[in-house]
Amino acid sequence: MSGLGGPQTPDYRYLILNHPQDANLKTVLKYQYPSQTLNQGFLNFDDATSGAVDIIHSMGGETTTNTFMFGGQTPDINDFTSSQTWCTISNLVIISTNPGVGSIDITTANNNGSPQNPTFQRDADVTYTGDTSASGQNTGENKLDVRQSGYNTVYM
Image (tube, rainbow, N blue to C red; front, top):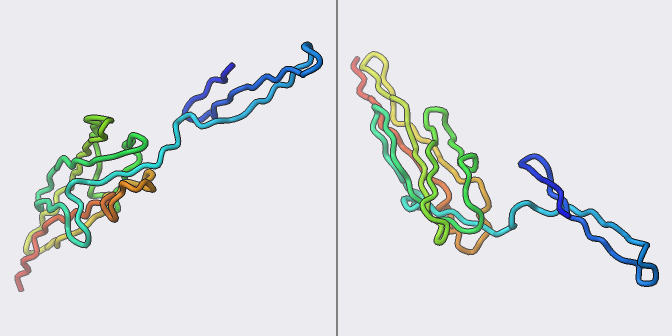
């Protein structure tokens, strides 16, 4: 027998042991098991570089589709975070699971200014926060550095 599980409910299995001397005597053990295989994972963005800006968006705001390779468990949209509210993540697409290939869209809001109200370039980090413990994980490639241009001419 197996218990029903959902996203918020743990899954259970039952082990029934027969007594070696009395067939009418049984022991039932209920134990919890993970609903997913606990694979070590990795996610490497194709455009990720160490120590450099990975993506540059214009000051008017734009959306780019950013591809990645992954292994272990399949990423979920909630596994991606942005360090800034003006930089959002959407549209997770899993292209293939073997090998693991996918993409997300990164959108930046308008950063236009004027000589009276200048805006300057700004930076955000988009990070995959899922499991990155597998040997296939390249250092720092689970994060994209996004830079957005600004209007920084100031007239005096």
